[in-house]
Length: 132
Image 1 (cartoon, rainbow, N blue to C red):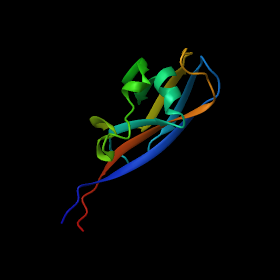
Image 2 (cartoon, one colour):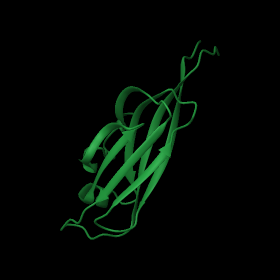
Image 3 (cartoon, rainbow, N blue to C red):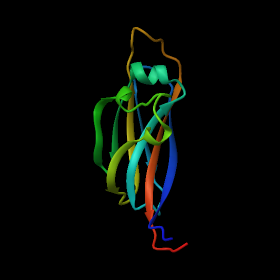
Image 4 (cartoon, rainbow, N blue to C red):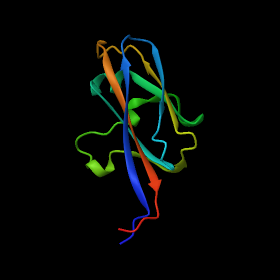
């Protein structure tokens, strides 16, 4: 049996420490990754991310999600099968492998701010030509 690729799953955390602010961070994907195929967003406080959060996500300066893209559109619940929880992106070349996120917390009348963590998971492919 031959395998043409392997999957790399990486986790990057952004700490949201103050309300009504934007938190920008840049992360490097695994240097062996050839293609980014998907992402997923989670949080230590899903309720805060759902009601208060939006973000802009870039791959090597290519916009994946524009500024102000609501976090609730990138979330999935427990009722979603584990294999369906990521946002598929096709096969985007990773180039220099840089993911940038600008996450914005905005006040919402339904939920009070407390510090929380937003996590972005990336799913990348390494192409190989090995036989097993």
